[in-house]
Image (cartoon, rainbow, N blue to C red):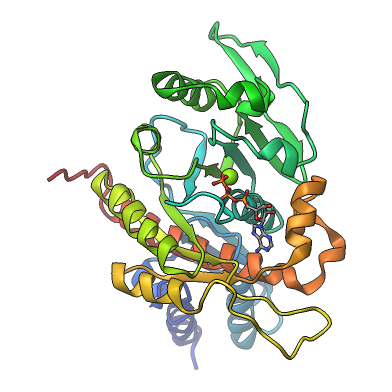
Length: 364
Ligand SMILES: Nc1ncnc2c1ncn2[C@@H]1O[C@H](COP(=O)(O)OP(=O)(O)OP(=O)(O)O)[C@@H](O)[C@H]1O
Ligand SMILES: [Mg+2]
């Protein structure tokens, strides 16, 4: 085969690799930016993909390398993976993906899910922030072992005062609880709450982030509506437990988000079942079974995963060391890790649409 035939073949093989999040080939995604082959000695490949890339970049690199080495076994191979540019959001331009964790019903485990997902994302090498937007009952200070801490603030060049998030377990965290005590926060009402939320969004110095996770207060009232309209969300995940009473609230949550054109990334079913640690062959469906799956189907979104009831998850939250951050949690952390991965796949799908139709907003 001539050198040019080899090149054609190589390009074809690289172009046939499939991005697993879209089920679409590199060729169709226009992922191959440049391929430079210098005689037999070096091959340089520049790739471009829809962000975020933390879960997929390594796999792409390895697959491309193997294909290149098959054709040029002695070449030095250099692969550069770059993110395609997203339209920047006007509210928090340094934050790439804003994700709300919401629920219609209180106490379903939203804050615990938000904290553990944030840490799971940080473990992939991403820069992650967590904003405790639950202004009524902030729980981030306790869950992150930071209760009683006060946020440090500083006047910046633009004359505005900014608060600095705390760095804990690889995540930047901020909460109204760092500005006022939990008891004070509980007596805030209506318009004041919206004002505090705006302050939290505008006046926290996050720096560059791949993800900012919002732990929203439970419910579908005015506060949640104001918050979701105020921030240009990549999407929302809805946390529920499997029983019917909780699922009715999921439907309400989803219709609220859809009304204000927020994408739904999927549903997370928490407290799905219980396996007694001393009887691992048994499984109890304490809050019923299959609800998350059924409601996801009904509303046309995906079930991102299920998390069983694990006593240690609750103990960890109370002790200020979230389950995923605790090296003693063992392989059960995969419940959160798998969900984080599935969630990011959904974020990438939404980002692909955004890149395809930049600046286009349709309001009906
Ligand atoms: N999978 C789980 N296994 C065991 N305990 C859990 C699990 N998920 C959450 N919990 C515990 O359940 C309680 C409620 O969780 P959490 O505070 O996260 O709920 P929430 O939806 O944020 O509540 P709120 O609506 O009050 O904000 C906490 O004590 C938490 O530690
Ligand atoms: Mg909460």
